[in-house]
Length: 81
Image (tube, rainbow, N blue to C red; front, side, top):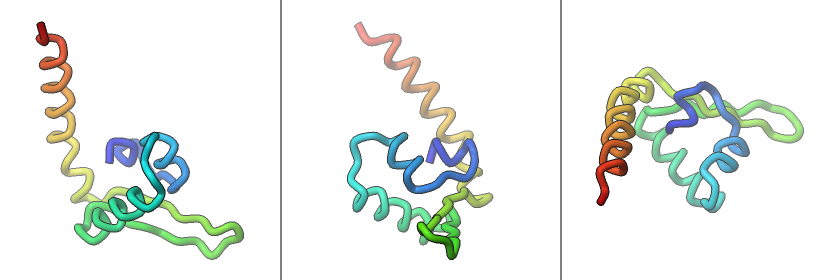
């Protein structure tokens, strides 16, 4: 989700950014977000196949919540004894 806040990404870019995630799990998560209306999956009829993922307005509406979570996490991390 955080990567898509920066703009449209391809599957490979998302997988590389997330790190240790299987292709199956990433695909499953992206499909669930698409079904929930958080992102749009656009398939291009090219060889090799190209698929782009872009957040919808609903997806972008989560940015303030995600920002607050990052802020809280940073604050919490800095206060751990």
